[in-house]
Length: 473
Ligand code: GLN
Image 1 (cartoon, helix red, strand yellow):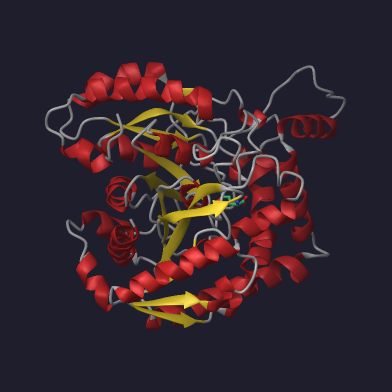
Image 2 (cartoon, helix red, strand yellow):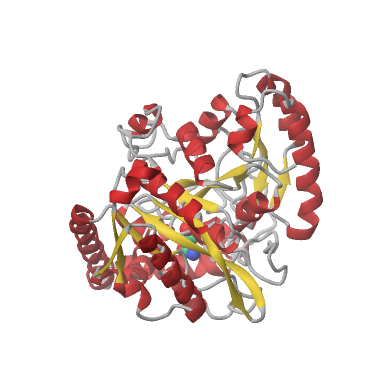
């Protein structure tokens, strides 16, 4: 069984009960090949299925990233630190999903605390790309991407701090969308870097992504950054812009994205896609966003600072690993033992980096400077969107690489986020749509095209997304 969300919701004949059972069986079978799920929640499914199946919109099997709290079940964030952590309550986005028509089919695997590019940092094991099982699926939500792409669930909820929804979507030939910052409540979602984190959706089509987003995007007073205008988006029956109106859009392609660091096959495909758009009558112009070139250094200064603060609570007393056999000669030694054993290498690297940039000797030189650069980038975006409706880039500078081939070179991996980070820096909505396949080491691998709009520009984003999806299909 391999349905779109739209088809499932509109289907008057099939029984939710049968569909969920069939997906669950399929997901478990596929898991031995790809390891998309860290856990299946059979008890939860059993308890809720009858209740949900009687709702008008039925119970769609959705994968939930293991960073989103779901009451009374384990949420481990891909970390040993939270291996046995039972969520005391559910995240707002998950409750909204349940209120509509969603049913959690299982928790998907992820890079530890969402930090990674390939899911190689997960404590529980590596997920594999279904287009080449010796390749990474992207990170940190690769599990969701593989789960959706392989047909183990209809769609998935995950988080995007620097590209974790869009990059794996591109690597696995599905749609990945991150909305405007504040559109979906972060309450009950473990924070990585709070000013950049946003819950996003993974689906098979742009329309499915829109349906899913509308189900979960509500204003939530328990999240201080929640957008009071989020409900406007959900409330709009028909988005005001339709695909046909896109013909009047002006599209900008920042020349900085094609300058360096991009794989030649991905670049050629991207340029060919632009020509297709032009041939269909759309105005696509090359323009400049000079600060784009600094977004990776900005991100890797600001993000670790927030990570080091957010992960401070995992000390074995308030939260995290608790082990009485650990050296507890004094409290300092206990913290050290817990944090050394509980966190993986990448988490430790970022905690160290973050603590360094926030220290009084370095704060002005690094952290403050990066904040100023971020403001500069944001004002470039504001000016750009006064002239352009959409900014277009490839989603990632390359296709999925072979498992293990980058594990020892974090700097090279950091560059994988080159095109996705800017949307998080600006709080902009952005979406990755399958572009086509490109050849890499004699294998055909999927690549994605990224569409970005201004803050709260979801209507244009979805309209143009549908247009691009149809044109490039
Ligand atoms: N790859 C990026 C990082 O490791 C983004 C992760 C994310 O969006 N969660 O920071």
